[in-house]
Image (cartoon, rainbow, N blue to C red):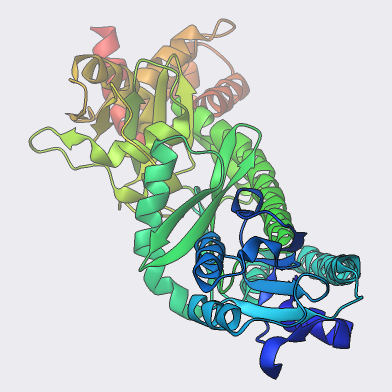
Length: 496
């Protein structure tokens, strides 16, 4: 932008303040020449208007009306070209401009108005180049900052400093908010409220609102059709075109960072879903091995199995985020707020199963800040069970889920022999050997190989092979008392 004082300094004696008054560094939007009595329909405000004085009407009253029209339009300065029409600036014109707070300047006789216009646009072009170079330098430094660890925080800090104000990034996932300077933290609750309102309204373009009487501009951080968060900016000055370019660059950088996190999270989610799927199908040992290979923390020994359904196409993240709002039935422990951090989950037949740690804690307990209620959502949750008992509670959970009213959470007490029922079914389904009979005799003889093999009429080595096969099929240690006790009772029940 070009200021009035800067233009006068360049033109020197060709554009001088009347009465030698000093000029402030007031920015001009343009230079306009008009001899109309009312040129305001052709003005936007902020200009330096040049005239020979013809529209003044030659009287104080007409001059006052002319100047008042300029004041109403917001004209910054009036330049009078001295020559055949006016040989000097009338006193009543000077007084009218003083009253209207419009700067009055004189263009000496013989100086073309074109000289003033050319000087203004030459300065404007030079200023635009400087702003562009400064903007490119800022964008380059922000891009370099984004590539470093903790890049999002550095980008937000750099943006706030470039605009002379504050900036904050409110992600829509479980990432922490980033803001600068530190005092901006006090604005976060109000920013979240406004962000939730915009998100509900489906606002996917920049929006402006006031916060404590100051304008705030908020931009969605979008990649494709998904909103990854919002960038809020409280600029310390009026935004110019280069400023907006810097902001758009930051929006792009934040979107790229979000996509990188999304890709990494997606890869980890595939492995964790596979771990949950193995547990749900009773392959506990295989699940532990895969979890270890995937770098997942040690699997919990006991879990509560949560089943969620909304009867529509809601995404698993939406179901999990809305689950804590379900009203639990009497005696049922509610869903913990950290359910979105429980990554061991698997969707099957329209039902999302989540393995909640028995203590209710999750790896990342932070809720997604923009989660909304999912229409038609209902849930059912089991009492704590061991991982081996998980398959045995699924049928009961599905029944409870089908009977739970929308918006409620049903409970399910886990049967003590649920896992044993699944184990016996798996043994009976094996087609190439009588594993049910083999395990029954082995347990009946309390693990004595000779007695069990004699009762079965097979060689001891054959018995060892079958027992190893049964243990591998079930994914459990058949010599573990917590395994063989319920299994023996179920096998005895089968014999009757």
